[in-house]
Amino acid sequence: MSTAPIAPVGLGTQCARTVLMVRPATFYANPETLPTNAFQHAVRLAPAETLAAAQAEFDRSADALAAAGADVVVAAADPAADTPDAIYPNNWFSTHSDGRLVLYPMAVPSRRRERRPELIVALAARHGWRMTTTLDFTNLEDRGEFVEGTGSLVFDHGARLAYAALSPRTHSSAVASVCRALGYEAVEFHAHDDAGREVYHTNVLMAVGPALAVLASGMVAPGADLRRVFDALEGSGKTLLDISGEQVAAFAGNLLFIDGGRQGPLAALSRRAWGSLTRAQRALLEQHARPVICGVETIEHIGGGGIRCMLAEIFLPRRG
Image (spheres, rainbow, N blue to C red):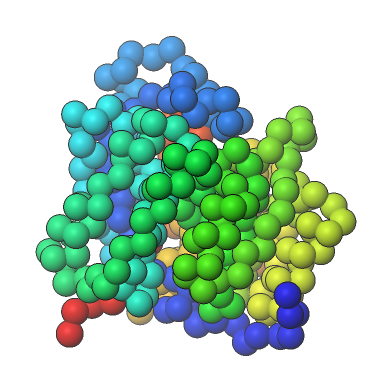
């Protein structure tokens, strides 16, 4: 890959102004995903109590993001589908500025039930989004190949790069299929936590904004993998905010840069994540975006995903 410097991408190219959030109808620690998600914990609470806590955190987060200037679209999960991870819609689809909708292959059956392309079609009609083509990679599930949306792929849209930490939920063959169709170059690497477990999704240890990238470089396999990631970040003109494995465990890597309109760029991150950052790290982040801090402790602990996972970016152009 060429490492020739690229001018930092503009806010509107890298950051969506609109994000979709799916309010949960069920919420519990999904037993199908527990084996591969070290961030997820089975908790013995009454289902109604767990759901109520997650819904309250969801509502406060949606309100906080909207108040900060994000365009937040809220949809309801299908109560008949029994999808405990529906609160994380970024894994089953992504949208792109040329009007394309991408549907992704998911590792476990319960997560496949979350896919509702008809919901995106209905929302597009309601909000004036223009869709051109649907790229459907769900047939890869029949071959046991998975790439779970923008959990598996952290896009740098300006540099046309897709960072991917390979894991049981992110297969190199599936990454290649998506990148080939979208015209992106894959930057693949391996990443492990302190216990030697593979990091299940790229977006828990990495985020890319217009000019700033957040990365837990100490979790990336040393040698060729780490050089590949550093070369890509340097070549695309990104400033690095390096975080530790302990901060990743507090979801400090699970943040999303959002176009906040006239109020400038936003960085959505959780209360635990913000609390884990040092004063210098906070200052660096604030040079590039205005933090929107969301209290999602229940969702993080039981679901194993944070605020970034709750936000599906809508890059679809407006009709007309």
